[in-house]
Image (tube, rainbow, N blue to C red; front, side, top):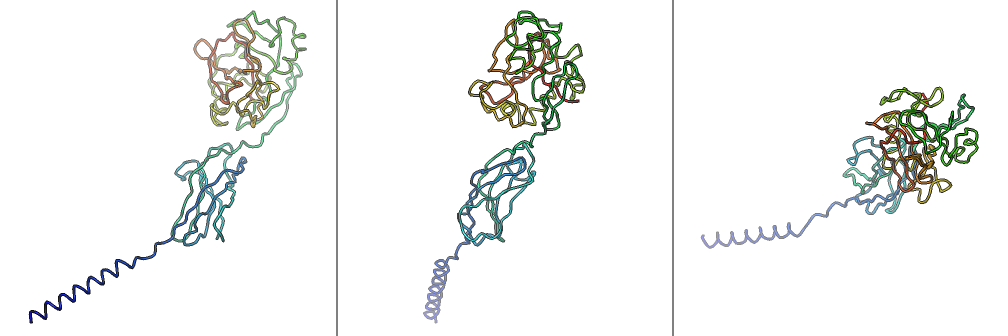
Length: 342
């Protein structure tokens, strides 16, 4: 009896080993996964982006694919997507995402999905363009001078420098309190002669801060409420209004390029980053400082209506920089003026 039981146990052990061996060897086939890559940005507009993608493996099949964009890299904020269906083959595809916000930084990635999973490609970034500029003209009734204007965001700016010139001073004379007006390169005091110069026609007038604000008090408000030297219906922008402009154009680091005239007719090379996509058409009129005119072709400077300490705030653009510099300087310096519509 004991021999029989031992024999039975040995046979049972062998059977269990065989079952375990067979189960170990017979591995289930893994589920195939989708593999997709994000390609490159082909085109952007103020409200769209066109992107390529690459389906490397369709896994168990793809039902929907395309690209998705968002304003955060977790793809949870302002999400928009394109949607294509049932690809027949692996390979490169193109899709367009619509209804984006103008002048906005986005993340974008490829995606593909089926009933079991959603796969994503890596992230790339882009910024939508500005809205097509709305432009027009108006006339300053004081001297009959006609100006271009452009709507940028919620503001309407003069698209050229103010050229109102009730009197003119040589660069050797200046004041922190009295109103002084200059035309770059002109050393005399004749208004008619100053207006006949190419620099006046091209760049307008340089004003010290008392002339720019025209006797008004400093303002930090938005809008400033300070007409200053500007025509009726227009005002001298505050520091806050300048910041609104540069913020709308993507921040001080890149806004200069979007404001500057393109090319080298007036700006010296490299005219870094210049696209003028805002149609602001900023020119390098230089400035008056320390009894001299300086840096025409290299630099453009514009007053605000806001004091800063003993000086006043202004904005600078440079030939070798795509950014905008926010600076504070002496009120006797001669800078340009751009007015904002009330």
